[in-house]
Amino acid sequence: MKKKNYRGFKAWFLPERGANFERWLFTLHRITGIILILYLSLHIFVVGSRAFGKESWINTMKLVGSIGEGFYHNLIKTLEYLLVLAVGFHAINGLRLLITEFGILLGKPRRPEYPYVASSLKNPKVFLYFLMILFFVYFLLGFQEFFLLK
Amino acid sequence: MKGRFWVLHYISGGILFILLLGHIFMMHFYKFLLKLQPGYEPMEWEAVIERAKNVSLVTIYIFFLLFALFHGLYGLKNILIETNFGRRFERGIVFLFWIIGIILFAFGTFTTIKAGGAG
Image 1 (cartoon, helix red, strand yellow):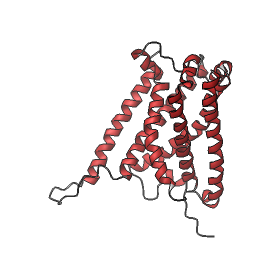
Image 2 (tube, one colour):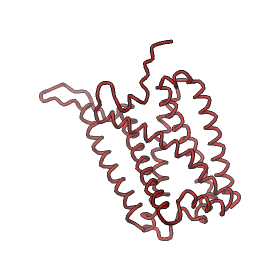
Image 3 (spheres, chains in turn cyan, brown):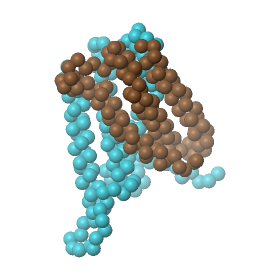
Image 4 (cartoon, helix red, strand yellow):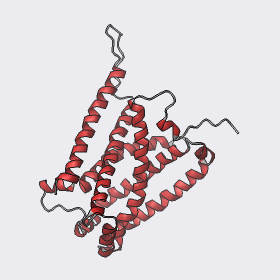
């Protein structure tokens, strides 16, 4: 058997060479990804109940706490908000990964004149700040939707 | 085929960015939309059935399901094969995920189409 070299889940939380901000985004991206695929598997069956009539739909909605009142309903709504945030994070960070993968926004190479800041290092950072603002807006919109509007 | 699916993973990711955020906005930001369009209630039975009868929406949702399942299961497979356990049983995991994906897609498509027909 070859030497075991796969650090697996351990590497998400204890990166070997320390970690920068993007590395933690990677960890969060994977965690939210797992949450989303597990949710999707359940979601297919929950919303699938509408194929079996109105009774079935309403009973299922009550069972999962999507309609109704009280502590359980509020708990489910809060978890749903967290899920919506997970979706937003995964989508927005995924957009960053796509942009990085295809080398968009790296800028053209130019003669390194003093004081030289490589555009390939600067542009992705600026884009990251833009995406953080975008996520913040999404966060606020979701918060308004789930907790303020009625 | 092995080693080529990552392209599909990126393409489906790009498509899901649009579809999933649209879905979230339509279904979960409905109080916000209610202000723009009074009477908008996405989770009411009548609204659900009305959407289920909309052929173009149903078609989009079936593709949405296909992309989401592929993207999700492929991503989960990628995570698993980075562990010692996953590396050892890679072929088994791929096979299992194909089965799970086909079952979930079949059930999702069946209910989506049946909901529109039974209305």
